[in-house]
Image (cartoon, rainbow, N blue to C red; front, top):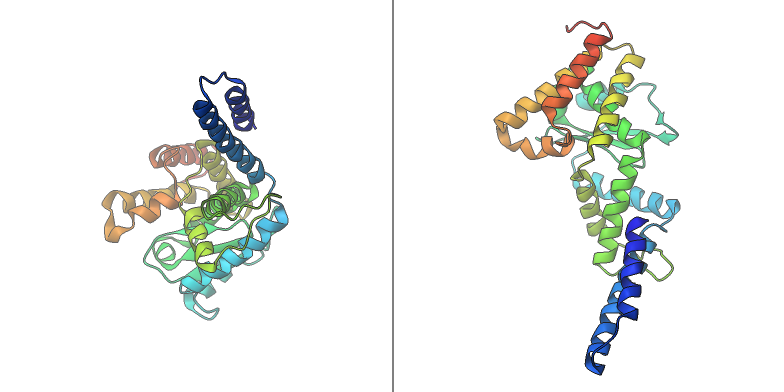
Length: 268
């Protein structure tokens, strides 16, 4: 909102500033039109409805699933994930849908529509408890609507870039290929320090709620730090995506460890 007010004030200043010549006046009016157009787009970005977002989120996940190797329900990875997430049907009213991607990236993500995708490499390196800690972290982003905000940003950036923003604030038809790109952009969004800390806390409490030693959060982060440090098989980019550096990983490991100690849990 502050940004919108600032842009409006700027546009008003341009409109009321004295012009030295007719040529300069025309140039000033042209710049004013550009400025006002930017203001309108910013306003429209905040007027996209939840219904629109829901429709595009569903299409985006269809495209993401089409582009990736989704393992069938009877695959051992899928069976393991189903066992671990049994009874986890929704987060704060958001219905959950778990699937496994066959991939050499140690990654996982939660789409704002409740689609949770876990990569096989992450499952390979994590114990059940550690994997649940990572899933709890991702569900924290869902519960706090961080994922929805990042998707909205990616969707609107794509629509504005391709000229698909309508005068009434709706979004025109976006191609399937672009929806896939939007999904990838959402995956690379880095959350703020506050958002990451809140998601870590959610994951910690998530483990406690399910009777699991919350040391698993710190141990999962340690494994990801090792992959990032060693940069084995090019996993560093995926790790950077999964766990943003704000705050950094060392700080988060220390925070989760200290919290577990304070709560009386022993590392096992």
